[in-house]
Length: 138
Ligand code: FES
Image 1 (tube, rainbow, N blue to C red):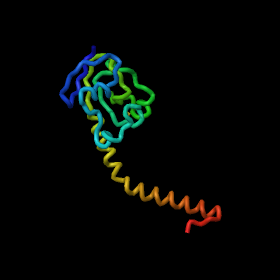
Image 2: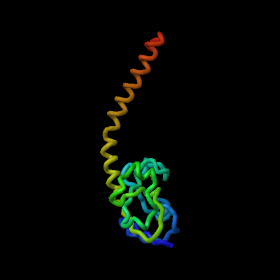
Image 3: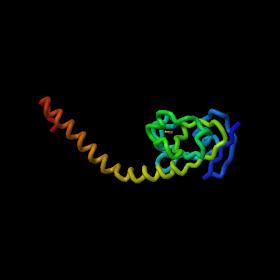
């Protein structure tokens, strides 16, 4: 059974080969998300890209999946915990997830402006559609 070390959590555990890093982390109460990603994540479907980890060696983990290639560049050893399967002993850092969480926090500051703009645009489209069919809203 391979050994996996979570650097920030100061935790070393053994896990079954082929198990994904996210599942191993959750079983051992290690958080692989940062910032809003803790709540706003896809629960392991490889869609959100919030569970970013950095591993020390390529050969210890499964090859990158197409979902990872959509979110990440192939260089730098950054992977998605939910898509990465354990092959051999490895050290894992969740620093990229924390960094990405901080970027998301910055992006969420624009959310109120987007809601107002999006709502206004939607209202305008609906208003114009009713005008076009000859049944004005007001
Ligand atoms: S949990 Fe969403 S990509 Fe891994």
